[in-house]
Length: 270
Image (cartoon, rainbow, N blue to C red; front, side, top):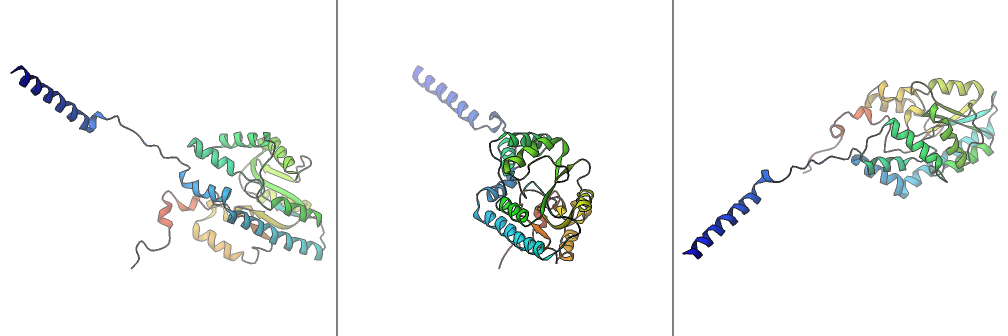
């Protein structure tokens, strides 16, 4: 009798325990936080690891050097010739900053960027975009001055100059050769300042606003920007040279909050 009663009680306790373990409400709730940089992981890996990225950059820079050197040799200029270049993702490789954001699960912020610029300048070496340094050597040997117009802010000048010195492409802090951002992001006014002292024979950048403000995201939608590319068709590869940058740029903003809606192609195939 006691044994039967003991077994019955044991079964009741065991049953209650199993029932409790199966109850979803007893499990602690977990919240999955998406890494804001997850969508850019493949883009950053492509920049850092693919041979294709290196080949494209070197191809652009080699073609640009050949074209510009030919113009310099055949032309006479009223003012000293210059080539205007952007810095970030055009001359300086900042893919490590994208890695930092990914590993921190953080979004871009000006504070984080400033920390990166200072950290970068403190390193023994600074990474350059493939082909950039050889290009700069070629155009300067042919008689052109490299002028850098960057949207790095003026308060980052000291660290930017340090980085450029480590790359061997800037001997001194010359305000005519390094024009940083002091106001709006537009580069038009700064290009005009360069044009007052030099004859601009070419521009090099990774974002189309490096060439003309009409490409800024605020100036129009995707169709407008694409139409402007066609309008300036005779300049690409002649006066304007574009480096690949799949990680960020004005191309992102017109995509909106749901970029998948901009995809072109069928959802199903027969």
